[in-house]
Amino acid sequence: MIITFITIILLIFCDQYLKYYVATHFELYQTKPIIDGILNFTYIHNDGAGWGIFAGQRLFFIVVTVLIIIYLFYILMKQRHQKWYKLIWIGFILAGAFGNLIDRILLGYVIDMFDLAFIQFPIFNIADVALTVGIIGLFIVTILSPEEESLI
Image 1 (tube, one colour):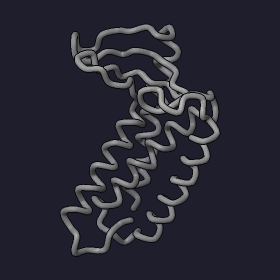
Image 2 (tube, helix red, strand yellow):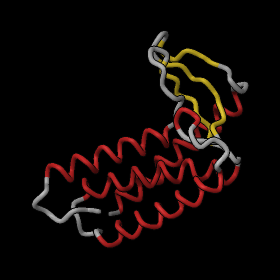
Image 3 (spheres, rainbow, N blue to C red):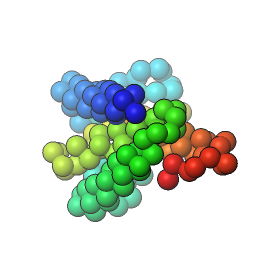
Image 4 (cartoon, rainbow, N blue to C red):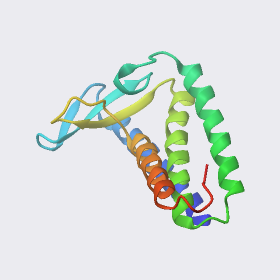
């Protein structure tokens, strides 16, 4: 279980550090290519979810995120004797939720910066990647071991 908490702390640190770096080294809406034609850094403020849905619903996102975090910590404590590779995915989801919650509480919006240049896709951040990877990992673990006790 300690590896889960280390993962949470490292992911939150990386997320918040990169957001700080982008906010202090880029102008708002400034774009710099990372891999030409594939991936850019584009600094934006996002006060909604992907594709701008629920824009301006700060309190809604804060309340829902806090409830999800409480529930996931409950699951983590309840399932603490599961194999580490099962719990790690909950850690990814928690780190992602915390990373964006910190922004919403302190700034009123989320800082996003990863821009896929080759496709029309919302600009995202490390917290979003952690959430997505965690959900996919949890889904795969659940599917591959249906005979064992479910994590959630």
